[in-house]
Length: 278
Length: 312
Image (tube, rainbow over all chains, first blue to last red; front, side, top):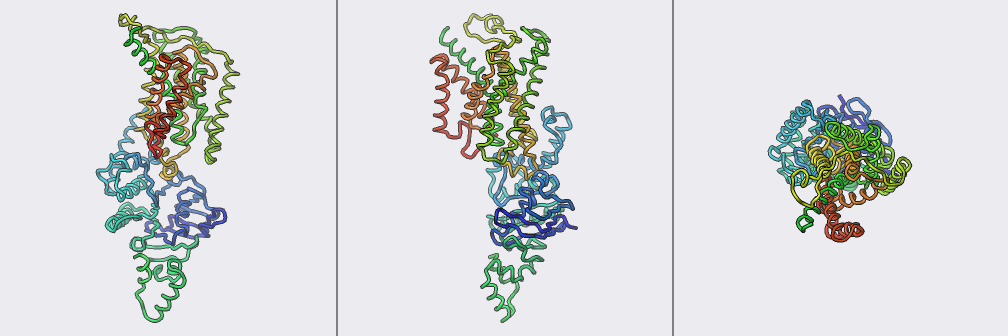
């Protein structure tokens, strides 16, 4: 069953077409990858899904419901959580508070309740706190609750962003370059975390990733964008062997050269992408 | 008056002036923190708090000093009603004048705020006239050191000072706790730091903005009423003067920073008290704004402000 479906989604900024008639289906329970060279329209697509701007044309369906033009907080309330390419934590709040902010749309108390503080509100707050602490422990920040987000090391900030996104009990988690800037060990840990989020919490994951090893290693299905259009789709193996993908990444000359080499002798199919992932 | 007495007197004056300025300054700093707008109409909300509470007292038929349960019932009732009125009024102003300009360049809502300020002032002039208005002396004035404590001193510290501080300081503490601990407070801080990221995390930014205007308006309205009870006089332009000083307090403390606004309010209060005494009241404004300029030269983001806008 499709959790997220894009039907002929187009986004134009003035004369620039960032996303061009994109059709995309993300099945419930999968880890899907969105790759493509810089400026291919991956982040624009994320931003449309999360409600930062509406598509110029086309339809976005989440859980069978059209979400075109929904404001970000409504999309989040429907069950879309996300992280950012450049970390955007609330720096001057503690890690725990960051997670609690992520939970905001799931808590009922209004501002009147906040002022008068009836027992229902205090128990809800206590429960929210408990859940936030559990989430911090889940992503591997068990003792960082009282630290300001800005004082955490980079790798932990990325983890905190995941915890904050998970706080709203999302059905779909959008990860924008979750391992950008990480060292190999941190990258491996992040990959384990993302798999656990899907396997244990049942959250569908869609990720943008530049690191080919991560994208290929995590995703069950990969969609490749170039100049806003989908040029390939399939399992990592299918995508890796697709000449159009190689061309988009390395240029036409290299692609034909590789094709010629392939005709001459059978090279391992992973070779061109291994060069990319490097 | 001995030197010590004078010093104590000036400190008392500073705290009283500072406490109501701080209460108004909070509204400037909170709104700036969330939507980066200097709400120039905010001082006039304070003036309307004065006018509205005055009208409510008139409706209740209160003309002179009250005592006993009657005093507290009237005081608390009128204060809550005034807070509700000025809070809703501030929210309405945002809805009508600022919300349509949310995505416009920053100058547009700023100019609108100046226009809104003129509108409110002129409406108040039509409503209450342009001369000084008498505000009934509802709260009894008792000289505490001489009449209650039986001391012989020239220091004037009355029950009205206690009222002023007793209302404003708990409100400030309450606001700080509200912002630090409640769900809405956290949403406010998150929105102030990164409105877009907050929205993407499911926070309804418009709801946060509405609440901010309501709370700011209610605090300014309270300040207007308390000053009415304290000074027993006011006029339609009183919001301009107080607004300017409160705004200066907010900038001095680091605009967008709640603690900074309170600190700035008391700082300006002391400055005014000492300048009134040792120079003359005509010099006070010059001193206040010179200090502002000096602080901004050496600490451009205010006393508690950080270089990256650390808002709320």
